[in-house]
Image 1: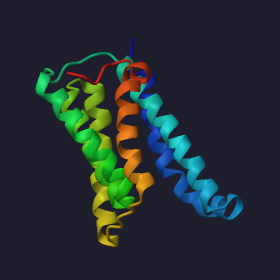
Image 2 (image 1 turned 90 degrees about the vertical axis):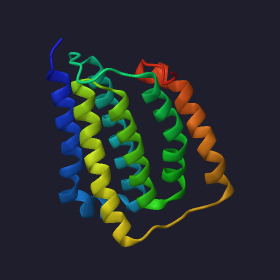
Image 3 (image 1 turned 120 degrees about the vertical axis):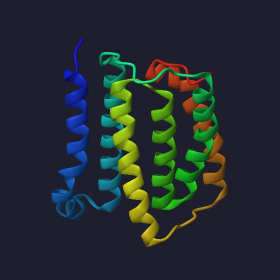
Amino acid sequence: MDWTEFALALAVFLGSHVIPMRFRAPLIARLGRRTYLVGYSLLSLALLYWLILAAGRAPFVELWPQQLWMRWLVNIAMPVAIAATCLGGMAGLMAGLTLWAGTHLLANGDLAHAVLFGLLLAYALFGLAISLRKGVTIRTGWQRIVAVPLIWGALLHLHPLLIGVSPLP
């Protein structure tokens, strides 16, 4: 077991967020904005999933011990993060990502996860600062409000199957 997969997954994930800036306008012109955003979002989620799995398979180097309260904190923060993501436009997405990355950074005290969630936290804080300058758009509607507990419940129950670790304390 070595760091190769994690390093590769991290490089591909970060590259996927830098390289498209050069090709974004031509791809939107060719595919349309909605198709581009859906495709890019699905690619980003797939690469993030690979990166998370690769972090779990990286050699374990403990930086701090996991405490029970850390898992509770993640479980309390996640519904808030999901609500921010579903209801708050781009600023909400970045706020939700900030909560998700920050609490997961705290709860996962090994080197690979500290690198993963530390970088994602920095990215989210940068994105939050930029999006807050543009203003916050609240997107309500019964569909978005109903989606929050459904998404949270699905993530809670699928976490052991998809990630391999129970999020419950």
